[in-house]
Length: 121
Image (tube, rainbow, N blue to C red; front, side, top):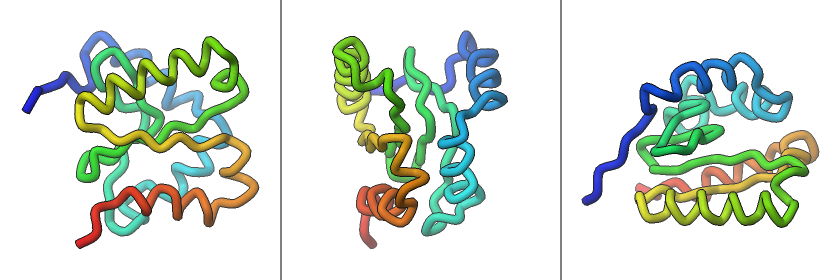
């Protein structure tokens, strides 16, 4: 199995800055998934994998949760997301993308989308 670098040292300040300045959508989801509240799974926020910083990452499930705003739906944003998702997939990480507005509109469905990615015992 290929090993990848997590939380590279050169990203420390950037990750700290992102945690301090989380979007309202990230803050809202974080309140629901932090402290193993979601089926006992540990999530990390602003977690580095290679050159990328993931919004949220569940190590036990190798699952990245990415909250997407309007900039992700431009041609440039879609290209960047595809490149990022392909890299993560090659590293064995599943990516669940969720549009920001769904965090407020239907948190129940957001949670279902996330837990559908969990390995069933």
